[in-house]
Image 1 (cartoon, helix red, strand yellow):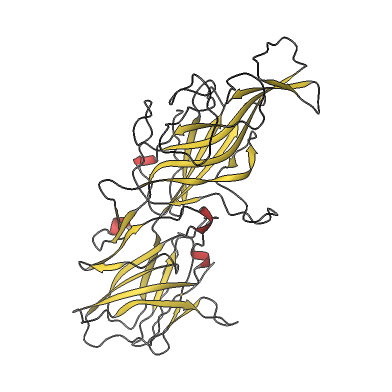
Image 2: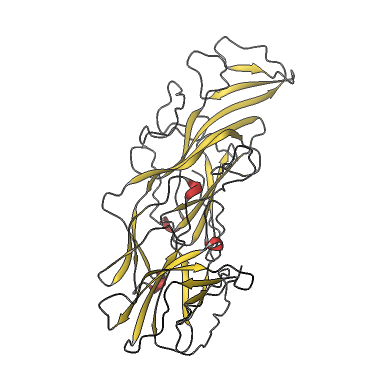
Amino acid sequence: MSKKIKLAGMVAMLSMTFVSCSNDELKEAYQGEKITFTTKVGASRAQVINGVADLESFRVHAETDPKGETPFLDHELATEVSGDNSTGIYKLEKEIMWPDKATEIEFWAYGPEGVGQPTHDGGALHFSNFSPDKDPSKQKDLVVAYTKSKKTSGAVPLMFHHALSQVEVRAKCGDKNKHVKIKSAWIANLNSKGNLWYDSNASANNYMSWRFDSNPSKQLYGESFSDAIQLSDTYQGLLAEYGDENKTKKRGNSLMMLPQDIVALDGSVNNNGVYIVMLCRIESHHSGAYVDHNAEDAFVQDADDLSYHHHQLYPQPENGGYDEDAYGYTCVPITAPEGAWKPGKKYIYKLDFFCNGSGGGILPPTEPELPEGGQETPGIVPGHPVVQEPISFTVEVEGWTEADDVEQPSM
């Protein structure tokens, strides 16, 4: 989608051009002494958020040099104008012209509307205690821009950048004789609040600087599913859920997360490392009627096809028997390329159950408390494999910004 942003003085109009992260040249519009903008924004692929493609409004803050008693633009709202011939046009409520005495203007812009309002402190804008919404369907793709411009008859180039990281989790089962069913998936031990500063000296980081408290707040991010997802031999999204009872509108398959260091949960499972935790059920699926069994074996004959029977592998019931409603927790510690999630990049974690020597994962720590109750298997302690071996995974990095795919070793 392509839009142009123009902030015009007498009519205070803005138009925005939305294009993918490419080498397209910024276009200029010369309109006398009016302040105008041209911009481009990395195209959002997020499904669960209202991203730049849905940017109906945004806010602009500006300061002059020398500074006046009040901001030149004080978080002014720019709203898209409706009409057949005004696609991509945004209008400010005030009429703005270049000030005669100012030699330079600093512009800050952010959107979409509803992401909160930064404060101006120490000569720079910053978002304090910014936190992605816990509900994936309510998360927003925060985009920000910063530039300095001298008075000019030409357009001021304004580049928006994604301030958050996008994270997706997919999974598959590589053993056709095993059934893996997932009822919920979450990412644990993530920093949930951060401070985003516009940093005029951080051009290499698109003028952004994320900072965290010494003891940052932690949060589980993910979702429970209305119906359990049974994994197949192809990857399926695990952070997706439907937004209506008829399952006609899918919320998406991604989370918008704070850029941060990602240190994996270690083998002792007593640290604050990051991991993906799932409420799951694992069964083996065998051909033939099951005859040679003992009373403690958890199995059931297939009611629809007597040539097959099923064993309940996890969670294993304490007193034997087959319980089709029993689910237990499993997890996989994760890392990130370069040790951190970066703004404007999408990370796709691909979990492999029972593929090339991997297994069903390990039992997660007892803290933090998980959203739903899972049945415990006697004798299995945190860190111990729940069935066979830990889960292996790979992680790929996709654009928003251009990046190479990165493969992680098996865990």
